Length: 105
Image (cartoon, rainbow, N blue to C red; front, side):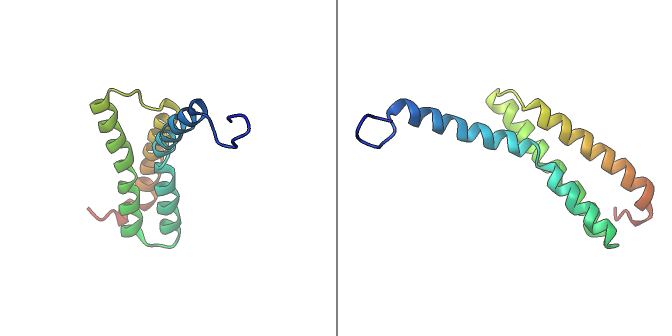
């Protein structure tokens, strides 16, 4: 903060604005977890078609963020990418084995 003014100086303001998009970038890589949770709740409620749709929508954030990474030449957030991929693949295999008869496509 600048002395006596109570306002952030330009250095602090630039650091704060630089970290906010970076944090959002990291959280978007982990967003397939929300779709996975939604699909598991729907499977438990015996709504197989809606559950499969929620599961398949979980692949969209990874695809979009991967495309953005390629176009902007930005390195993907590896922990979020790895966790999202492992979660979606494991959930897909598990639900195909358990709820395969309800697969709508």
